[in-house]
Image 1: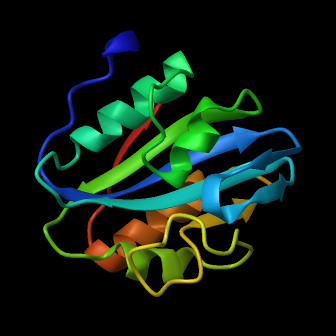
Image 2: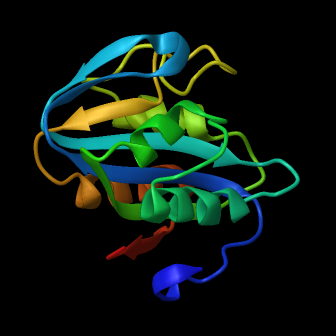
Length: 153
């Protein structure tokens, strides 16, 4: 990994915090979306065979801004110049807790984003200012311990 990012292993739940300027872009089946300037929080799970190695991929895609194939809605944001990945927050878990975390974060969201495999309204949320402390508290409320946070990409 670039910039001394450790390999992340195991299974778990995570949030990506992205800072962005105002922009409009096409996001696959979600269509054209207008994004306000600020911060967007993506809630995801990594419970499959690769587990949290998915985070290493997200970080690499955000750094390189180039992928051969878009796999998830979040890939559109990670490769778009208006968005910068600023924080990754995760915890180890083998339980499907991402929907509970998404509901806990709630508020302003992008309908249909990142939730094609569940009944949530969205897994992408908006804040005007940095939500880092808020997201850490949400993890602590649900999991009863502090998550791991990686910053400075």
